[in-house]
Image (cartoon, rainbow, N blue to C red):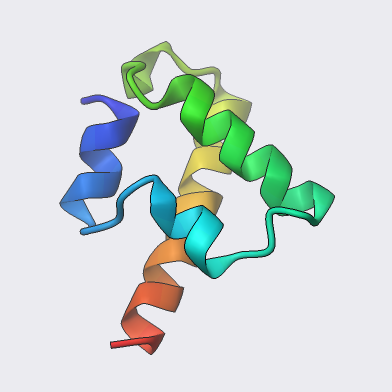
Length: 69
């Protein structure tokens, strides 16, 4: 499964990060860069540390999406 497919499965497009989080902050800027760089990558190709960070980012996005519904 690709990173993009994982996000789309949760109804989150890549623009969600820039529209809902302050990418001027170094943390969210790094998150956005990481996601865009790996958007078309297979999840299995990521390192364990990258996979954990991907999961953390996705969880935060899903929580915000649910909160804003």
